[in-house]
Amino acid sequence: MNILVTGATGLIGSNLVPVLIEQGFKVRALVRDPARAKKILSDPVEIFAGDLNNSEAMAQALEGCDYLFHLAADYRLWVPDPETMYRTNVEGTKLLMEKALEAAVERIVYTSSVCVLGTGNDETATDEDAKSSIEDMISPYKKTKFQAEEVVSRMVREQGLPAVIVNPSTPVGPGDSRPTPTGTMILNTARNGGLFYADTGLNIAHVEDIAKGHLLALQKGTIGRRYILGGDNLPLKDIFEMTARTTKKAGPKFKVPSSIMYPVGFVGELMARIGLIKEPVATMDSIRMAAKKMYYSSQRAEKELGYPHRPAIDAINDSVDWFKKNGMLD
Image (cartoon, rainbow, N blue to C red):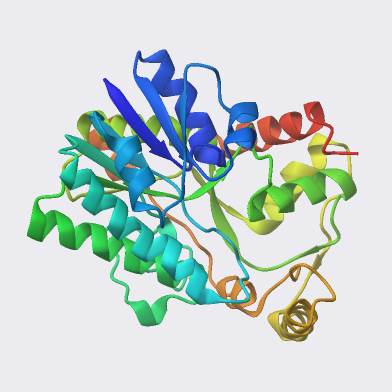
């Protein structure tokens, strides 16, 4: 069976590929940088050069494929031109789904995000049925992921697209080479400890569990149905404390109110726009998002897919160990 994976060099994708190879699938990867991909992916993977705006490359990579995992996305908390993110995440997803229909792909797993779901006002965990709208989406990334999932859902209803949707929470673990925004937070805390924290919370999931959840969605998921692939709901302070303990650093002590963070975000974005820094440490959008605890429930995936997840501390420990082995703690 041939499988095409987009986003194969990303955190989830690079953990999914070995799972698929172990199951006996012949894996293809559509990547922007073949040289980097060959360093990350193992030899059996067939590399196709292209991106989500290249229809010809998509068609070539999909030819003869039985299945498609679409994980690729422009994932940044801050972007100077949101239109570039829209072209990749929304228009690129639509184009890829159209090419998958033309190639008669039997089944698709589309990787959305929990960020498109509504959130509660307290510590209640959100599930797949939580209502949300484009107006609820704070950042360009959230907006484009919301729109992209709408595209996939509409194509399922109107064109018979054979897609299952998965909504990963916050993946943590080995392979975070870039690293992701959450990986950067864990890396910095492991390096230096942390004094400050915001009164927010995240759902932390081991990236290897999320990768296995993708395969379970392919095998057992219902077409057009959402599945949250998550883990433990934890306050940010607890995440920092767990991370600091792995390298015997001091944990956080001072809670920072949003009123102090907004000026930091404003100045950071201004400095990035005029080229003084590459990107801000905190953005206005990320500060607004931190006003709520982003807690989610994976009960549907556990019940219908048999999705397992290990404790968040395992994900954090494995993440720090991987950073250490790859010289990133220095």
